[in-house]
Figure 1: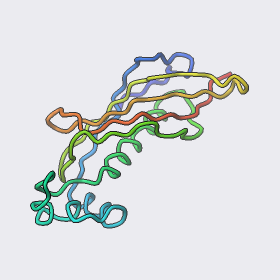
Figure 2: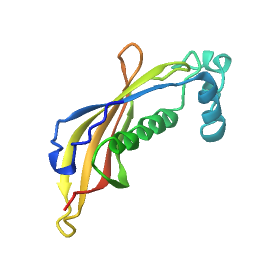
Figure 3: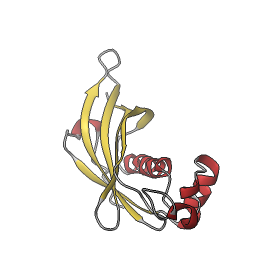
Length: 153
């Protein structure tokens, strides 16, 4: 993965875009996640999904997709000089279309907002639009998340 050692809180700009990485939504992983966190039949087998009006085949839980998208954000910042402190929340999460077992997801991120704390100048907040596309370059999900970071002051 690309490293950005010169990227700091102060050098980030709204509109900056970064590639986060890719993740194979392996069938076994989709089933394991669904069994534990979202045990709906259409997440567990193609046979059950075949009867579903929307999916027609086994689809990953949207929560699984969101977790995979989120898990790639932290490692991105570890490749920069920006120190993450904590998650600040999810403002928006959209599942545009199903993610199916064995889909390859490609994640990217765009900086949407950057602000410094007025009362604590060493603390800043970055809002990011994280997107996932499948192997056919179709947008499958996007979310707007905010994190707290050291500003370097």
